Length: 262
Image (spheres, rainbow, N blue to C red):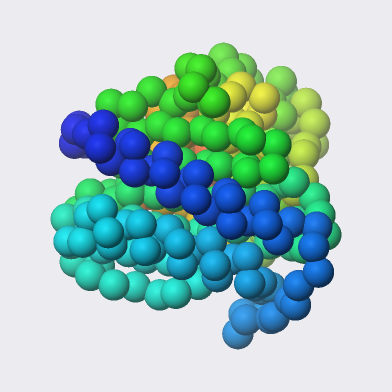
């Protein structure tokens, strides 16, 4: 990442977006609501749409020249210097079954590069924030990735093996070699890496709204998060990601993923 300074005003706005989206989501959690399947068969609820709507309104009021990319309500002013990337409920399936493993993801791009991220779990009140010049905190306390630097000692996670199409065999080998695997959690997995509770996450098929908030949080905690070629994640990245608690562990896992067909 470059060293673009993140102002306190931007950090404060990111917290406000987490606050207002969380308030909206809590009003629907474990209540009855309809579940609609989108074109890609992923579920969406009124909570997803309303949480994104209130965040967009707050951004427009506070910073009308900024762009916004949201999972549910599309793009606006995406050529702006600063662009907010919103995923109101990452892990909608968990949300619909009353399981508090979903998160709200709030990312900020500067000229297309993720520089600030928030991972917010509004039910258990876990909030990670971190980025360029902003060391990652969890609920206001500094956190750091683990110092585990051997795959054999690593705890490795992914949302679900069924989502790993091109790296299924590589991931299976990692599972055999690692301490133990963990499945489920979507964006929450990356907060666990930042907090030192998990060591590696491998996923593919992610979209910008899935990873824009995650990379700054992981990197701000001393971790490493790139695509499978080892390139920094940014607007236009393919969505094949590797997150690790530290650079040494990342370097151990990367070669097997880098060898896969692009």
